[in-house]
Amino acid sequence: MKVTSVELEKRCRDPKTFPRFSLPEIAFVGRSNVGKSSLINTLLTRKRLVAVSSTPGKTRAIDFFRVNDSFRFVDLPGYGYAKVPQAVQNAWKRLIDAYLVNREELVSVVWILDIRRELSELDRMLYDWLCSYSIPYIPVCTKADKLSRGEQAKRREALRKSIDRNADPVLFSAKTGLGKDVLWKRMRAAMRPQQ
Image 1 (spheres, rainbow, N blue to C red):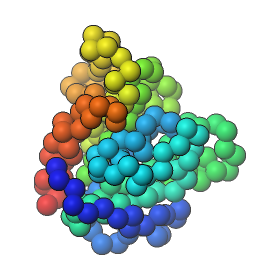
Image 2 (cartoon, rainbow, N blue to C red):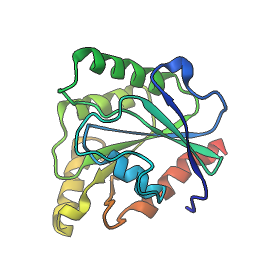
Image 3 (cartoon, helix red, strand yellow):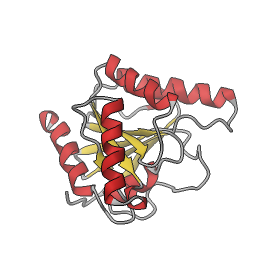
């Protein structure tokens, strides 16, 4: 996919401010510090479009990026970071829930997981939640470059066994570009009925 233009269209902390102009949207969600910002930057071939931080919990709003004037990437706050006040966590949850449940433009969720980590309770809750609302998702295992090919295959199969046997997790590395083309292909397929 050739990315010719990207702009931060809107940063929202309230569902009432979500963009109104209808474009297909791909949302990115994962626990804090999973590599979400690096993944988005790699896909869009931009180094610093989305702020990358070693401090979990950096994203506190929903960012809408207009890509090629034809679709949006939607960067959701990471879940599971306990070092922010409970009131902030609750506000994030309400914002994310409002987006995922009610957003008609949403065509798929890129569910980001660290290949080196087991599924957490929050990961499982998100998975169950996506399934209960029939929200299409693409599982992506980031930081794949940190494991050997044999370990990558084992971790991928373990993930398939713990969620859906038909799920086909994309192995991804922002460092090497592994999985970038595969993920673009899956996202384009998700957007096709909308375009």
